[in-house]
Length: 367
Image (cartoon, rainbow, N blue to C red; front, side, top):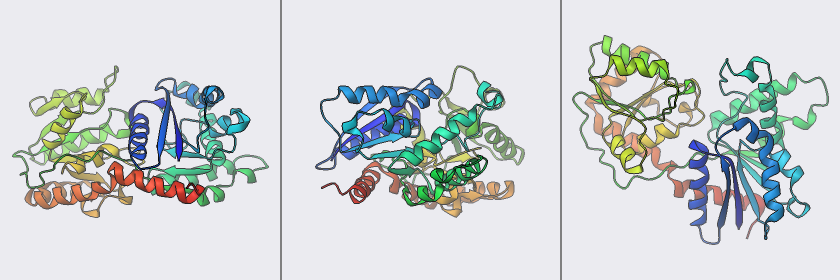
């Protein structure tokens, strides 16, 4: 099988998935994956225009792939309509990291204010309908997307059967995001005195930094001591909540800044005891899975994607339960680290790539 992977927004989690799929699918005998990318900027224009650019590149290509893989930032309907005639029978599998129907848009976004965000929501719907198969990164994501798409189409005036979500139910499945396997994990390492809390998510509203600050403040008010490692991606505009955490807990911060190398990131994960997280929106949770793979114990709000793959022992519904987890897992750190690590192993890239490979061959009868 010769696959072509198209990534129109090649940065962050999209680049992580694209590079991981290319590398690990290509390691399976008889499989070759070529990667075409566009820079990770101007995301709205990518959703409108990437299909035309990739179709132009296809017209200049010297050979035809057996399969096209792409992400939710590409309009598959546009791509299929613009591809050269010889390419139009090549099946397209689309991977949904996120979607514009249920992702929390910034209320100040100019297109949100004018109601034009519905355009990008419909691109996602039309693209999923046009794809030959759709992968979602979690069962939660699949469920909320299909429900939101159904509600969107219901508001349309007529001729809606071409966008029935029943067909999407039948041509979609769950494929988690892959993560790199640690070289070694010491699940017996003791919990720190005081424990170290990790923030390895990007500093954006959907990741719930305000809730993170609330949890830290609650723990402090309850008399609990802790240290902090803040290594999530930061942007030019610093969120006020990050500044407040820096000021309030300046004496507790062991590291503050994006880990720009794998070695640095790994060392920070291995220095952490807990990842405490309550995002506004989480379709899978790569950063949490990476932390768990290194034996970091998660304490997570029982919401979004987490109940679909995280053991109940790590989930909380209310503040009292969160605080109980904080205390109890300090007493049983080795068991917590072992369970966290074991949960994350099913997301290691070789396993995810093998699952993808087997499903592709089953769907499209590649020899």
